[in-house]
Length: 255
Image 1: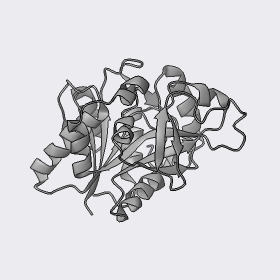
Image 2: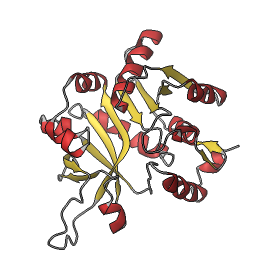
Image 3: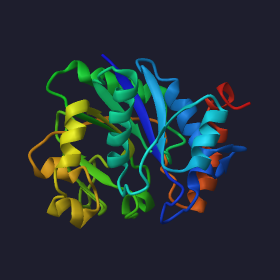
Image 4: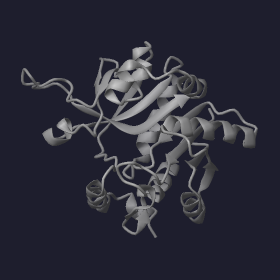
């Protein structure tokens, strides 16, 4: 199975402009994302997809592979799909699965990426997404975090920025999960997703995976025990730096 990872990144993020090059322990955040993702067993190759030369130059300086994409993309999936098609054209090979790792996930764990790949041994699985356990009420209520409810097979039922499952009856014992910006697609599924118009629930929640669920598709959710943090603010950057300091993986790639 030909599996690649693509990390979409751009300097013009609305909430935190320039964040791919914001430094954690002296290394730009996109460097952490790239080097940690590249360690995952089962990957054929890892690329950063960007429209910004400054990001491309940095990734090349650490020996990374870059795909230059248009500066008109508003969604990471659009940039990832363009990169996928360019990689296929350049290599002459068809990709089976593309794993999209957001460029603001500096705590991504290689073993979680490997776990995503294994789920594609099941031919019925088309999309795989990592989710993390929510450990405190503040994270649960924060609308910047996408929450997900799952069925007994660990397939997503619904995703929301609201606190789900509802705690209006106490919620004791109900699992609470947060979507992580690591989503894997079979090749044709990603291209079909990008060719499909946005859905009402996707727009209402500002959660693009609801487009899949609203159309009756399925998303296999893979829980991780790791503490994960998508960096959207400078405050979260400082939190991520503290968490990385306790991560034994850091020393294996930070020079």
